Length: 182
Image (cartoon, rainbow, N blue to C red):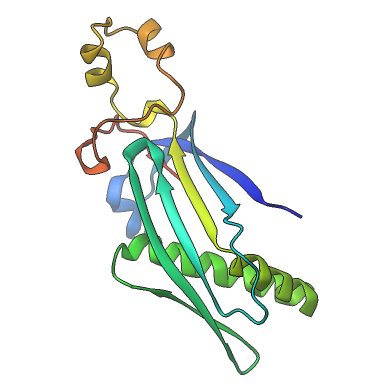
């Protein structure tokens, strides 16, 4: 059975439009770039419990030394399941993505077959670790190069380890201007 899966999404550069595109009839122009964001979902492998109704979900970004954990619980309601993350409010954006993603996968599995939805709940009951990483192009590497007395050049940038681990928390990292669609 599948124990991990990695997906990636291209970065983007918004050439025109900005937040104006949120209002009609404004348009924007976006170009995809080769820098990517990566998301890996792995089964934690906690002991399977018969008729389990909760599991641990950890979200980790090793590049920024970030990790948070939630307890995912589910209850049967009428014809489907209701999912909830506790404690809520830690990171509302991540929580919304997790809940909508899990509910969507459950609905897809449920439409396929009752066995498929049971398999998904069994998998969830073992816990999940979601690891988020970004190519170096999304964040300034200037301080990394300076700390190592390296030239501020394209060649030096090419020699930085892939998905370089920062010594700073994410809120202190300087972005390069690339955006993500991740």
